[in-house]
Length: 140
Image (cartoon, rainbow, N blue to C red; front, side, top):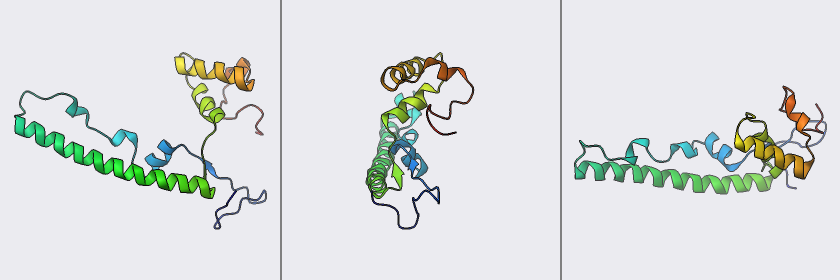
């Protein structure tokens, strides 16, 4: 593994690369998925003329193209950061664990808990306590 020359990864320093998905990385750099589109453009208002409506759609399309170009650049930056060891992409276990820590009534939470029990042996009792931030087997 290639390491960041500005940071050490030895056991004495305690530095470890951060686990980030691409979406988390993009949100930190101002290109969140929430920034695409405009909620008001899903339906044409009665007061909009054809010209006004087309102009509004054109402006939004330009904004979305700029947003997409920014995200394409961030994908390359994310890939290079992962390759350099500055960031670690979360494993399937990490993604499922984060989902399983959600509200117990949600269907996705229940499905993630079943996956963790089946594939990684996480007992159902693990979800009964208050501190769900520490995966089983991890040092507290």
